[in-house]
Length: 359
Image (cartoon, rainbow, N blue to C red):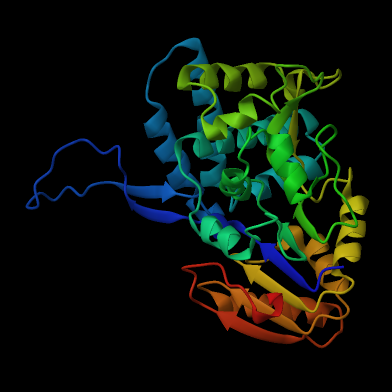
């Protein structure tokens, strides 16, 4: 169904690094002290999480009212996990595998809330803007026939694409236009199997929806804080309300708020993901991999992605460490006992690579 497929990892939302803009302490060039550096745009890759969570902790401040105590609890727990485990996803997989369901749901909520808070205060990776502008048709606002698979549960792509929604940037409009598949979604427009363009979120999305949709459903309020529809104080109240009224506090009942973050390894929805991959990949001849390192924790779905592309001719790997990524792709084909197609490395990551095969 798609001649060209993109596979995105955390590196695709990397953004930029530099001196933090909120640094206000004066310093002299002769001082040993250096201005702190951190993430200016985009999101942390998994190895940066301890640094990024500490950065968020500093940005949130030390105010100890009830709401900030909840925010502090969320941030502190993620910081501790990011220091003790190789990645936060590794810790989540451990909780899921050992059937620590309440703690698993709680941690997923903390991750989703952290991503919401981060994207509230940090601009998205600007490369998405150039990528979308290059591909979208100026008349129809449609993308060329293609599929984007992403392991990222952020909203970077949606935040960039929202600029093309001229009348009310509600999330349902954006997902409808992008033909998004998110396996935990139960009320936004449904994924259209036959549409020539699709955006498939393999791990779901780091956000929430109200279990009883109404005029105040968080699909139409909190999610739109990405576009500043609520002030900062109300945003914090919404974050805390979600945390206090979501799945981990209502493990045996219907929670008020449902998390859209749903890892691909979870049994729920896994077979549907595999079916979607087979449908989109059957005609694929070109695969573009951007910023993805093929962690072993994702091996089942990664292997299925490649096995779903029997006509694949060329793989482009765009990564500063393209050599190692190429080796991991080759290893997957060795596991499947198949010859790997042509693999071309692209180490310039200034803009997302667009192959000639897209026309």
